[in-house]
Amino acid sequence: MAGAAGGVLAVAMLVQVVREHPVLTVVVTGLVLAAGGVWAYLRWSAMNRLMSYERDVAVTDHMSGPDFERYVARLLRDSGCRGVRVSGGAGDMGADVTARTPGGRRLVVQCKRYAGNLSSPDVQRFAGTARDIHGADIALLVTTGRPTGPALQIARRCRITLVDRPALARWVATGVAPEVLDDRARR
Image (tube, rainbow, N blue to C red; front, side, top):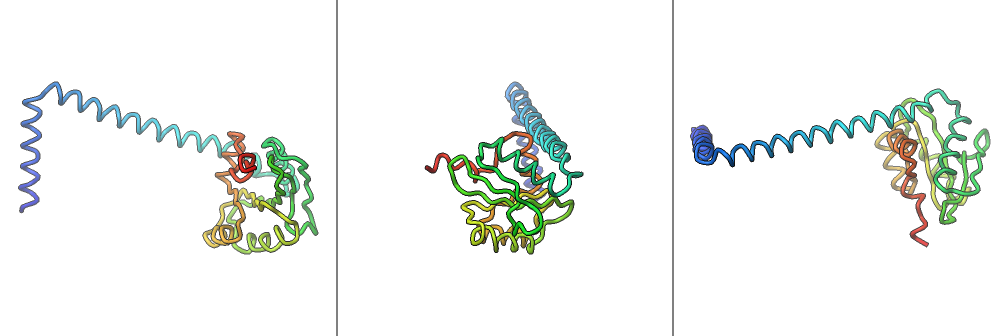
């Protein structure tokens, strides 16, 4: 009962303010509507960008594994990496692409062109070879799939940078590489 009485009182006060200050009411209403319109436009724009990014990365959906490795190598070159070498295939022990970042750090990349989920065992296998066998300063796992929660946890614990489908789409569409590759400022 007290809640209903409070609601009635609030409405009565609002009606009184509108009667006493019609110009202020119009201004405030206009500002609220404008803010709502700006919010709706920004939301629409962000969704449109994401859909555009998804179209940009969709080109990878029909690639073979080796084609995807070459595609990632090209992205690395375009992002300023040097000495980019594709070495994927049987016996690569998780190093599909190797390179040097713009700042000179050794980069080892595992490429997984998946339609579904990237699982924890995929990340674990790469974690077991990236640094100890391949000497990675930076371990990067690039996938067209979506990592599971356990895969994300393993990647964080093993200091593996995971580039999933949405991050790959942003990289392709904007040309802005994952932050871990921009180590020039650290030197």
